[in-house]
Length: 158
Length: 321
Image (tube, rainbow over all chains, first blue to last red; front, side, top):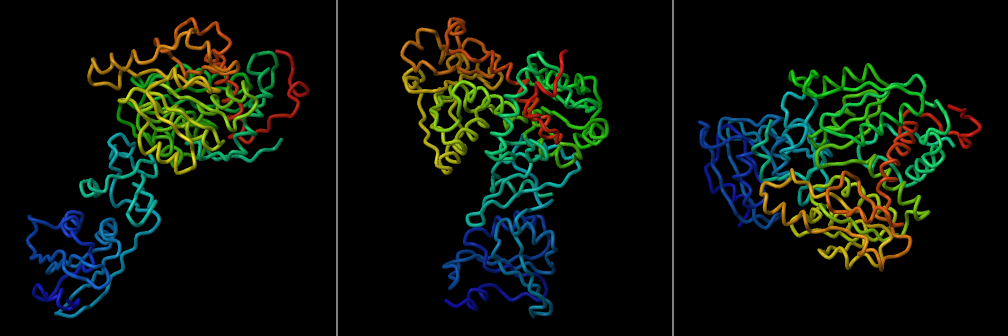
């Protein structure tokens, strides 16, 4: 099945954001990480495990009437660093946004280790996670050095 | 010898092998100063800030002794319960204040990562004296000094680390350092207190030859060093589990009959009953010298981090007390 067919599984949106090329099965984690979910009032369409030439299979999310901010893109980088993000205005792609997972993730999420110095949220210095490996993603806290529990990160969004 | 200056000492990764060897050599030359046989005020006019946010006897006292033997002075945070920390001051603010009062800071903190956090906030070098279950590099330096003193080298030794390998930050830092010098390691512990898996795999990824066992006594025959540790009661939620682990190893003089003549027994102290006093009188016991070496190793580190050269001939530069 072509990419076009995958995209059309759900209705085209007038205004909003399309997140394509999400690793298969990760769409729910993406929503969790972005804080977009059950309580949000905007319509969300989600397709999972659709065939993809590039990835074998993938997930796609369409969020209506909402454009992702840079902060949200930074969070997205932790779950789907190779996803494609397009801002849609009047049914057309108005902007393509680039996700950048650099060498360090600063002030996006806090360390998942319960005894890290940064668990005291009154401490003012930046929350810093080093990208040790990109695929599969491995992050370590700059301060305590602990490997991060990726499943827990969504609960630690700043 | 003019060695390169390091910014601070948070983990052993802050030192190259070459720097470790240089600092151990500085420590060797400073022995008469540490013993009080020679007065060499290399750090006169310098002030060490001792920030111990959790209890410490040996580390805190040996830092203080090291600074004073070199003619420097020490200011202490004092009891955490009566300091500004109890009023809710952040570590960042405490460090900002002490940074202005001192030239170098030695710090122990219950939270992991606190030393790196402090280093990022400070202008002066930080010496990590233990951060949670994280790192304790100054202990590692005194351990390496003790091993080198006994064996004349660090490379290619067989070292048995025994006891609480799960929670003991001392053995975590030491294992990494020993592997860098090509030592073979044996981890002897009760199953509940095994070395964390990520550390074992990290060590193996660095080419280490690591053997894990519960049989301490059976692994000592070929050992050059047996490093015992205390089973820490405070780490157990279940009293029965503690009781089972606590009695796991009790090294007695009779266990040392078939070991190598020059094998040394080390322990970071305090000990409970994992080393029987009968071991104290054997040629193998090194734990009290090891505790003393805390002073000389920290003297060498204080000099290095403050950019002060330890003279090649300390007797020519030093004077009588």
